[in-house]
Length: 251
Image 1 (cartoon, rainbow, N blue to C red):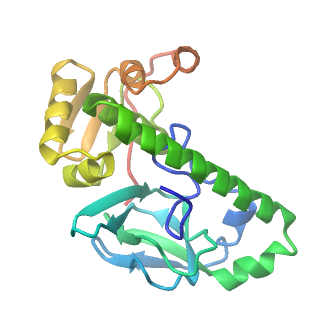
Image 2: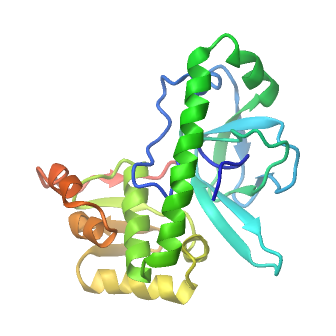
């Protein structure tokens, strides 16, 4: 993956992919804008459309995908509340953005972004930081798909979704609005493999599966080890074990 007209400011393939901070100059462009509603499975824009706007996700979840020459779909990421897509110097969107749940978005024309660069120096720095994040995300995703096992890929996916929905401690729950097929297409696996690995993690007591779209993170530290996180990060996050707090996916 590379910086494109459809990639978020923080990528799902990055372990530290947190939401865009609300005080950022980039986010401030969206604050006065009204929200638009996108129903489930509706397309925000298609691959190849002119890239005329930037969007901030206020609620809900979107999938980003690209169609391959043989007709297969490659999911390249998921958009979370607070994240921005459309930051690019390309004149056309390189991916399709489609709602998974009902989504609410704010829209800013790219002409407004360009006009704001001259009077907001911080905005230019944020755009450069975004480009750096996306370059690192591309490297992380290539490593994920090329070198990690199916178990490691799914553990990595659960850990990242947990962070991006605010569930960062043991015994929390996350909601996964995307389908198993979406996850498979994102991780370069088959849907059968995704289901089998999730069942294995449940059998080994690392997760619970109370419903198809909800995962209980029973042993988050072990999932992080499977995902390949350094021990220093694990020690820093294991100070306490709270009671279950559900991290609900906005929809």
